[in-house]
Amino acid sequence: MGDRIETFVFQNTQPERLDVFLTSCLPEFSRSRLQGLIKDGFIRMDGTVVTKAGRDLEPGARLEVRIPPPVPSGLVAEQIPLEVIFENRDVLIVNKPAGMVVHPSPGHDRGTLVHAALGYAPDIGSIGGEVRPGIVHRLDKETSGLIVIAKHEQAHRFLQDQFRDRTVEKLYLTLVDGAPPTPTGRVEAPIGRNTSHRKLMAVVPLGKGREAISQYRSVESFPAHTLLEIHPLTGRTHQIRVHLAFLECPVVGDRVYGKRRPSVEIDRHFLHAFRLKITLPGESQARTFESLLPDELRKILDHLRQKH
Image (tube, rainbow, N blue to C red; front, side, top):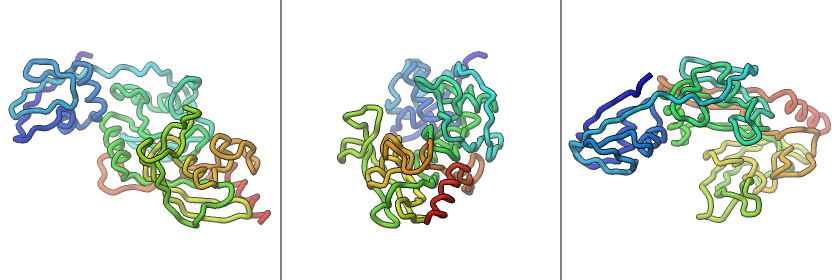
């Protein structure tokens, strides 16, 4: 398969960034994908290669875009069972089990959700240039619940835009040690790298990290624990776990940000992505998808209720 060639003429009266204009011309590609093509020299303006995505276009500029065929990801599909909650030609919505890593990383080169998704829908491996084919958002290894996977490039961009614009509603259930300071609340505390342990995250001073916002609501109280519904408005690494530890009510089973020895018998985090409200490609109204608590988490709550 040869390169695809597209040509465009910039006819706006006001200057516009190259990457912004190309995103409007080629809506099937994400902005980051097009920025990669620009950086790699696949764009010519008036016959000259342009490598700066922020280059302003002047009226009458002629653009030639060379789009190479998708590079196979190199990942090997694996026949790992998936609990598919919903599927159409655009997306897969999967109930990820605890213990499954979402995408390959050092030490996790097999058995990830990406490997399983490639076994289920091989075409996602050709989503152009994506290091993590089809993946739009993530869940931590020990977090279970709903995750959406794009099946083609245009769907990937459509979904990415919603996550970037914070129009997706993600709700989690979590059991925490102790209780938050108020039954309902909102945490606005920036998150950045822990200066002592670079692989971990932490709440950091303003200006030192990225904005992070979480809302929570107490659902059920126990003598030493609280069941919370939590809604992250941003998507920072380990956000829920870091914010709840910051409130001094860490997630049960979180040996990194919480108690080294869990306060109940559990071999994972008590954190489950149970509801996802999102607009699917080609639709105008958001849909809501739900996933029940896994048996191992439900049994812990049953045990606490019996004791209570």
